[in-house]
Image (cartoon, rainbow, N blue to C red):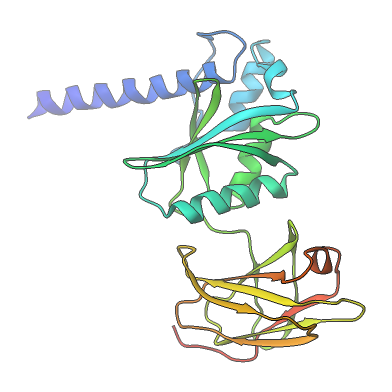
Length: 266
């Protein structure tokens, strides 16, 4: 028994060291970079900032790739997570960092989920920026690799969520715009009241989703509304608020508020 435990422990240390080495090489301008890999683990995830700092100090950081305006990225998780939520959470996180998705290269959901894109950002897309913006949507970067011309990011996605405005019960809540739509976390609410102030010409288009981003309701109007109330199902988690006629009616608005009027026991 003791012998088996010793072998297993040795293998685990080796596998983890290999993962760190792969991550370092993926961000380096040389294939097998040699730097210290000690203390690069932060509660099971990769300390991206420290790794980048060590690579820069040793002049091994791949500044050319990460200063480019375009970069092929592949996001990978071995956890069983809803593909719609995985993709949407990543897209919104990137959008928040002014990184645009120019093209979807791949999307696979089997033993692992992977989402490949061509990402664009003026001035470059560096690993620290990716780490920061993904963390705001609940992702942790476990490691990096280079796969078929992509920078692969291995993610812990168990705590992922949409970066949505949280409704404050019984009071108006300013909404945070995201790419021409408003995303609201309505968990615990029995209804959602949306107020659109003049001079807005908002024609409601509101989609309601559960926690896995399955659409469970759709509200579509053909007339301008300034005060609009939606009753919510028990499993409602997110509301995506848009405009049925012209997305700029809501994208350019700064005076749209969400209001929750009642509670639901959960």
